[in-house]
Amino acid sequence: MLYSLARPLLFSLAPERAHELTLSLLKSAHRMGMMRQSIASKPVTCMGIQFPNPVGLAAGLDKNGAYIDALAGLGFGFIEIGTITPRPQAGNPHPRLFRLVEAKAIINRMGFNNDGVDKLVENVKASKFKGILGINIGKNADTPVEKAVDDYLICLEKVYNYASYVTVNISSPNTKNLRSLQSGDALTELLETLRKRQLELAEEHQHYVPLVLKVAPDLSAEDIEFIAKQLLQFKIDGLIVTNTTLSREGVENLKYADEAGGLSGAPVFEKSTACLAAFSKALDGQIPLIGVGGILSGEQALAKQDAGANLVQIYSGLIYTGPTLIKDCVDALKSS
Image 1: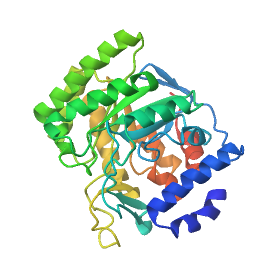
Image 2: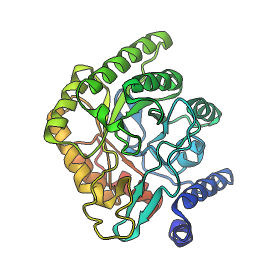
Image 3: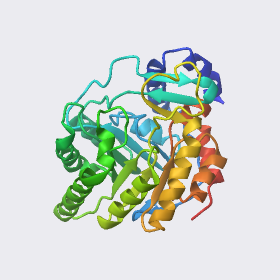
């Protein structure tokens, strides 16, 4: 209700300004004990973790982990923060975030703007949140793609003790050549190296933190088959399907449709769900799947579950429908 009143005001602002304002208002409301949403308990065990409900916040909203407690008050079953990189970086030049309101879509080319992994760890340590926290890791823009694995290792080592699970983001379209890590020897080297380090860290810290891969929806059948085999070979703990798309199907001729960047929101739903179903078939229940992309209703969350998702995540849908979307999704999903 509150969000439906605030939305016209927020939509009158530049998208990135609205993003910042929403988070700071949410933080203030949380401090005053407002903006708490009671969500039905619908526990699900996945990757060896018990989630209070299967609806999570996708990475990208809270890049630095500065708003964890306020976001937790909305009733998410889990929260994913990041994408974080070893060193702080400004991201791409402004403007870099665009609303395609008629299509309930967003195009972003943020470029992993963040305060660096050390700042994120500080923020996590300062939060009171005791729930399930995913930390999404990436590489700095000026790190050559041949050395990408070094950046992922730095982040994995630094966040390991503070994450419930760690997501390896190789699918943002806004960091040059990042998506090349989804194929061939580059993927093999990345997964093999990170898996080896994960097992060493589990031994060192005497606790195991699952490693999850996040992929793009713009994959061929051959890509899906190859990635699935690699995930099984290296025993990766989970897969997030999907990131944003480079396709402009469903937004042709709309204002901002020609802006460079990844498209999210309603138009990516069909493509990301088809990708999810293909991975579900290829992996045959051996690796948990987190379905994300274009969920704007409880019914669409259920469609992700029916396509093979064990958990779902939302982000763009929140911007168009508000926090009641979390409750709608939890209510619609079947208990596992």
